[in-house]
Image 1 (cartoon, rainbow, N blue to C red):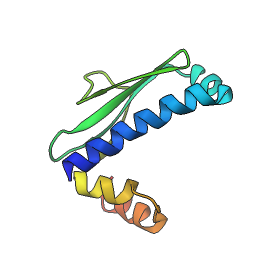
Image 2 (cartoon, helix red, strand yellow):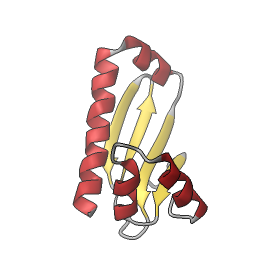
Image 3 (cartoon, rainbow, N blue to C red):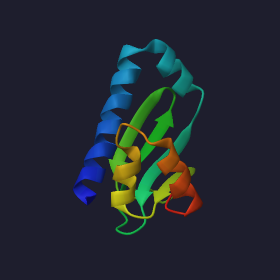
Image 4 (cartoon, rainbow, N blue to C red):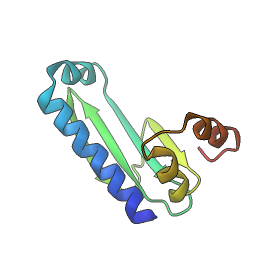
Length: 101
């Protein structure tokens, strides 16, 4: 499940880069914020960080030591289940209530 979680996060980075290239409004919206965000799983310390600076995005695998925002999932399996389309909003709420998110 860790490999699928890592693959999903790498795909998110590719989609962000494509959106910046294809849509100037998206690039302008990202240019308003300078932030380092990361998505990670707590069980194996796998994750990916995203740095937004001046309308550009950089990313790297692993855990960033000084991120501004961290979205942590209890397990990689929970992250895959909650991030995979179609999104079940009731499952999102239940995961937040039971501290899986």
